[in-house]
Structures are given as C-alpha cells and as structure tokens.
Length: 448
Image 1: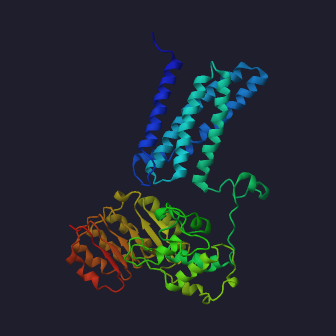
Image 2 (image 1 turned 60 degrees about the vertical axis):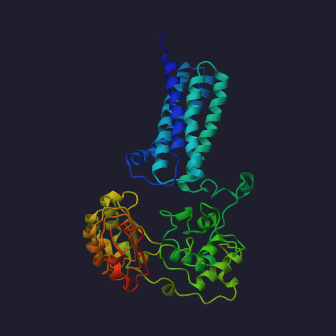
Image 3 (image 1 turned 180 degrees about the vertical axis):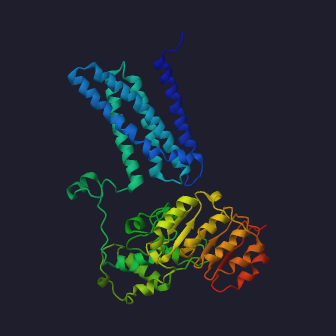
C-alpha cells in the first residue's frame, strides 16, 4: 500500500532533521576559515534566515484570526504558511551550519545559535505533523516554537551586533528586572582613554582587533578588553599581579606566551607601569587622569605615535577597488590612519600570486604588514615587494620562495620581522639578511 503524501513528507523531514543534528556535530565551528564553495553558500544564511522568522510569527496570527472569525480559508492559509516556514527553517539552518563551519567562527554563542536553528527546524516539522489531528498539543508546540525562535534570534543578534545588543539602551529601571548591568561609558578625559587605550592601540590592536583577534581577545575598546579571550578575563580589576595581561607582557621575550608576539614591539617599562596602575585602581573607564598620582607627564600625540606611513585615507576608493578585484584584505593596522595597512590573504591564499603584488603597487607604501603565508608568491613576486617601502612584518611561510629571492628582501629599508618557515630558503640563503639594520627576527624552521 503506497504511503500517503503527508506521511512520506513527515518521514523525509525526520531524516533531514537527523542529518542536521549529525551535521552540526560533525561540522562544529572550530574557528577555521575555509575559502570554499561552502562558505559562499553559507553567506546566504543572513538573507535566508529572515523568511522562516516572518512565516513562523505569521502562523499563530492566522490561527488566532481563524479561531475568532471561524473562517476555513484562514485556517488553510495557516497550514500552508507553516509548511513554507518548515522548509525555510531547514534551508536557513543548513546554510547557517555551513557558514559557521567554513567562515572562521567558534565559541559558545555561535554554537548556541546553531543548535537553536536546528531545533527550530525540528520544532516546525513537529508542529506541521501535529496540526491536523492534535490541535491542543499543536497549540502548545507552536507556542514553544515561537519562544525558541525568539531565543535563537536573540543569539543571532548578539553574534552579529554584540552581546549587549538588546540591553545596551535598556531603560535604567528595567536593568535589575532583566538581570543585566549597563556597561559604563568611557570618559574621553579619563585615565583609560588618555593613557591605557593608546597603549593597546599602539602595541596590541594589530593582533587583537575585530578582524583578527588572537586567542579570541580584542583590545580595540574597553568593553572588549574587559570581556577577555577564549580562556577568560585577562584583566582583574584591583589585582594587577593576577591579571593575565600583565603576566604576558612582563614575560621574557623568549617565552612562548610573551606578548606582543611575532617580533612586534614590546611594551616599555613605563607602559607596563601605567597598565599596572590602572588595573590596581579598579580598571574603570571613568577614573580621571588627575586622580592618578605619581605618574609621568602625559606625552604629546607626536611622542606616542610615530607615523609609520602617510595617511592612507586619500586612497580609500583605490583600496576598496583592489580588495574587490584581487580578493585580498587591506585592513587598517589601528584607528590611526598613519599606522598603515595590513595585507591579509588567509581567506583565499590561492588567489594571491606574484601578479597580485604587482597590482598592489598603488597602495604599496601604506602596507606595513604583509601576511602572505600559503600563497602562490614566488621569487619573482619578491622583486615586487621592493615597492613596499614601509613594510615591517612579512610572513612568507609555506610558500615556494627560495634563497635566490632574499636579495630582493634585503632592499626593504624598514623590515623588522621575516617568517620563512617551511620554504625552500636555506640557512646560508639568509646570511645577507642577518646583518641588515633593523631586522630583528628571522624565522626559518624546518627549511628544506
């Protein structure tokens, strides 16, 4: 006896639910960015996710209207809309899993959002199956689905806009009721704004920014710094000695956990002292400069920030065009436009070739850090790097460059750190670079 269409659809939907649960377990977001077709498809998730949200919220409205007006047309419409919502929920959940796995996401928030999406798909299918013959159970299941939808949407909003997205402007009297504490604003004249954040911007934001936050730590703002990283808070207000941030910046540069890493300029004793004083005083963003005693005079901006390049803002249009054309990222090193740009290729290393470096010539003078690991750059491309007159940090690990190309790198006047790990460069090939003024670090591990 052939299966009825509804039974067949329920069976097929159940199989898809099980596949989604298996997929989110197998393809759990691990923080690795994968430049594949899957990431291209996954990026349709923010577009697709709004359809099931709208449809699932429309279903109870149609059901209530049908109940009070006793119109069968509305009841039939509710069933049709629920069917569409179920299909849309499966599509959105699938695309979301692909995006999370291939887009470089990880953490509890993205995991909760992903599981919420899968459960919404399962709940929608359950409601669709219960609706014809179990109206009371269906009503309860529909209510639970809407609540799950609201919770999952909240997780998505936090993931996209920050964890305080819904509560940032919550009226004061509702704070205690909602169980949240309003984040204190940063006083622009405070000790934090005038002393601490400039240190973070100069020495830390290069690796701990919205686009590249190592250890899941961002230091481009007060709330981000206080949130900490993947291992928890790095600042313990009132206790500088127990703050992971202070421990790391005071280690020996030879230690694995020393920060800043990769040969980047270390904090001075005066800068470390300022951080210790600020943390010991409570690490607030509001304590005034005048309240802190026995501190050196505030340096002039010109003393704190030595320009690394010219101001790149006049070339903003060219920068955006090159990013679109070449498939690379040209990211500001900090909020200071004379700190230059970082060339990033990690999202699509195969697209960066010798020709790419040649095409970057119009903005080469603004690039201070070139992350070319695993790209298709060869010795021929190294001759193009001569135009990168302000380049300080260069990562060529896992590329096809050889010892023959090192003479071109010797022409870079400001090069400080060079990573040649897993290349064809031999120890004798870098001999000419070892006495180069300003070059502090050459990484040449497992050369072959």
